[in-house]
Length: 263
Length: 359
Ligand SMILES: Nc1ncnc2c1ncn2[C@@H]1O[C@H](COP(=O)(O)OP(=O)(O)O)[C@@H](O)[C@H]1O
Ligand SMILES: [Mg+2]
Image (cartoon, rainbow over all chains, first blue to last red; front, side, top):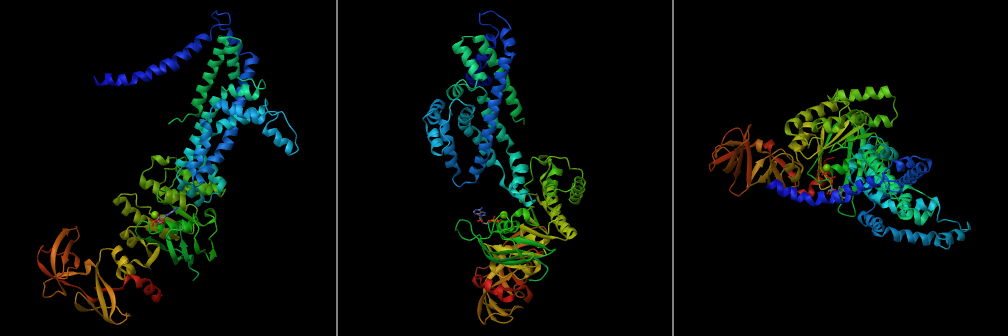
């Protein structure tokens, strides 16, 4: 009787996972085995291993890597600084605040800033560099992505730093460690879990970006994300789109496994 | 200052955020090769003194000297001092060997020298063979030894120990008291040991600083402090005491509970108001006629080696007696004591001046 009630409690979650996780994944795998004419084949998989798609995959990984790396470079020092400030909760809030703003709005805001007649170019003219093409470049794409993802990197690192026992830092100094060695030998290794979570939270979404890619990078950057969008919405080749999605899912699972905390 | 002095505090005051000072104008000297104990209740500033010596915090005013040099602004990694932290602060991501080797690796010593020194240090604390263990796999007592090994392997001139025994159970604690004392003798370096446990302080130290409210109340050998507490706080904190108000009639004659008694104290103003301390173990039970004091037995507890007997005199003063003889609750008994058992103290507010005069 009791176990029946418990099973009942689990029902909504099981249903949810079935309906919104398992079924969609199965559907994607199912669709990936149909070519554009609607006949069953391995054509899509063969196509994926041609240079066009492999290059696309490589560039997806490369951009996701760049975005993650720059986010980490910015987020770690920021988080470290945050833990040392007086009103850290307030500062943290200010940093998280942009996370609550819609992604599209932020992207459009950057269109204005980076546009030919935007503030950025105004500034460049003012300091004598002259107006430049900023939009639709690798730089603007990575810059905007990093701006959007940085809070997701700061949060887990900040939490890890807060959890770090401060006497361990004292102990390192006591044993003769300079601030840099203290960081390298004690602070960083002990906050590595936070860094991993942050990288996971940035790398995985960055891998499948397409909205920012479209808006900010135009046709400059073609990634797996934009390719999926193209196949589903433009060329109507659902099979190929699904195949790319299968590979993305596999990549994400591998990344989660690599960065996960095995405890 | 003599050439034995290794650390000197000169009028050191430490404040956090404009509050009351945590340390209030503290001055003292630490000599080479001795076992010192900072003793006082929780919150009196013991850890703060250690942090000032280690360099984790700077004095608000005053100067700290190490080997005669002002070290107020020297960072902790440049000081010849190592600390055994209260919670041990062992690095959880490193094994026992790497924890102990931490300081040596920073000094960029050769690999085989590091190996040798770590081995020796671990042998010193009876942990040979535990090199590859994780910190999480070590018991409280073992962790504490690792913390000690990690500190002494750097051959510091001064070792600071912040209540290192407080997390251990009684048996292990007593064992470690012997081991620490023995360790200090073998190493021959200065230990500054922090505790709030007066028995521990008395058992282990060459010299004790009794602290309260950010001030050093008294410093001296355990015997000095036990036998001649300078004020009520010290008398109360170091062991159980009977403390009553009194008056110093003249040298060697003190009056309390309405009677005059011969004593061994002198140097007070005639008729100066004082406080009188008599330790419970210095009181002897006898018949009411033979006793110097007449009291009624109120309650009695058996404590193993002695009975703890609580009595009241007719003025309502409480007298605690430790005696191997049993008493009967409700009986009138006499208490006898020798003149040497009486310790006369100046009143609390004058006590500091009293200490200064002696020196
Ligand atoms: N970083 C700090 N900021 C503010 N107050 C502190 C700080 N560290 C210690 N204190 C205060 O200083 C006093 C003495 O602390 P401490 O030296 O740790 O005492 P003890 O070790 O004798 O228990 C306490 O009242 C404590 O609250
Ligand atoms: Mg303390």
